[in-house]
Image (cartoon, rainbow, N blue to C red; front, side, top):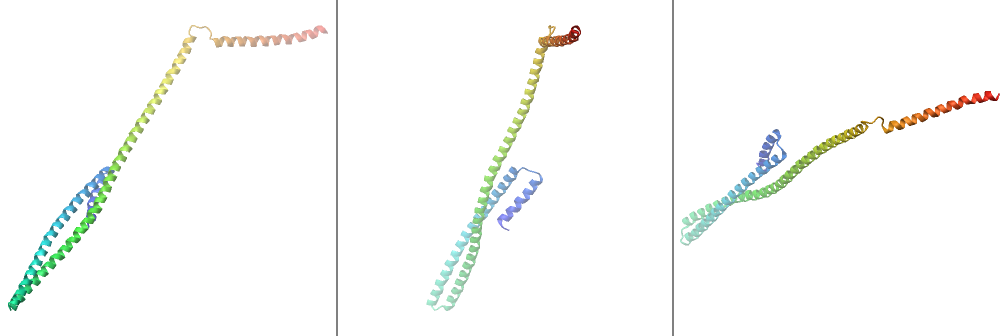
Length: 227
């Protein structure tokens, strides 16, 4: 199983649990970062172990090479002494040492591939971790900004409502005060200035109509006198 698929399984299991509990996005992002950091440590630990094992196998391969070289030298020495039987045994030992060196080197190749893949995984994981941390910071800032805006707007709305109600109450008090002044002005007075002018205008209307009736009655009387 690849390191990212394993990490994905871990994160998904935790995310599903948090989503079920309706956790906020900031906590989910923090969990993802924590899981990625733990995975990063695990990958580095495994890579360090592989590097240490590779160094040990490299020493073993070098030891087998040295042994093979020694048996080769012994085989030559045996031939110079006309000991073909010893030379044959030395050659066999040399071949066995060479085969062991080849086996160790094949293990080293596997470790090289493992370390190389771990290096690629570490680079990818570190890049994703940096990206996740940057997004997490952005998410926190956006959340704080949104909360501040909501708080400010709520305060502004409450203040506007309070101000409007206060202004309305002040207006009512002003109207009441004006009406009270008018009523107080009329107290102790027989007639108001407006009522007096109204009476004068009414008297004038009556007098005008009366004069008109008088003039109308005088016309027939004049006609009869003339006849």
